[in-house]
Length: 291
Image 1 (cartoon, rainbow, N blue to C red):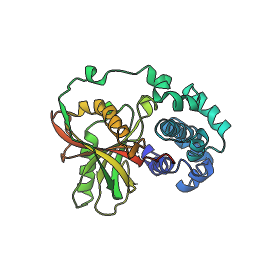
Image 2: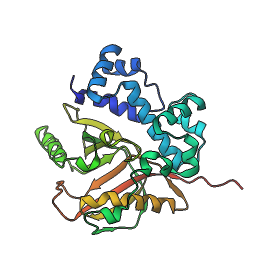
Image 3: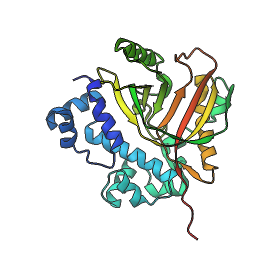
Image 4: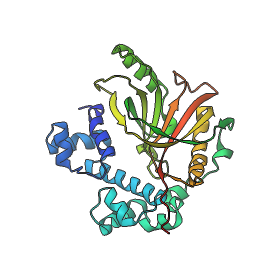
């Protein structure tokens, strides 16, 4: 079984971290025996289904503790843990600190973040970019075809979008094809070799996933949107600025990944110096203190 055949399971896991993700349930969704599914999953993904699921749950918890006004117990329950103690032990084993340390000191308390803090502007190869103002929008549900890259974000090849376009041409799928990039993880929280990025295309009509092309749906939700104009290499420097803009808003808070990039160009070409990219960051309406 090739890795691409596991895409439906991977998408189901990331969308249902608070649900039943037992080996038996995941295997049944794939129509496989638990033993065979575990063997194939571990071989292709490099982690067992349990290890993969628990890592994603803990990484999501780290974001929630940093970004949301929530208790450790509430966070544990929303990412699929049954109690405070089990979650705290797992969190400390994975990150090396207690969950409450992130609530008190912010995400920079993570040792993995501390060792990687850099001045993005001083290290950027090209600082020439412009940002629009940031506005809040509600995006309607959207069906996407995608090819997944696992590894450092800076190593995502632009050929993935060309492969998607060629696939759509071969399938005779018509419609206006908007190209997107979806970052599901945050560098510093997720190890570089496990970062998930989807080179994606909006689809105007139903389609069947096949081979390395998967399908997923972006649910309706609220986003803070900013347009970036510049070389793609300057995008990483922009994200801390955009998160700070959201923190400065009186009515909204950042909600964490995924980060979505809509590309205005109909071809992704890393050699072009100036590109227009709409960056969508999920937000939640800020809770107002009780009187």
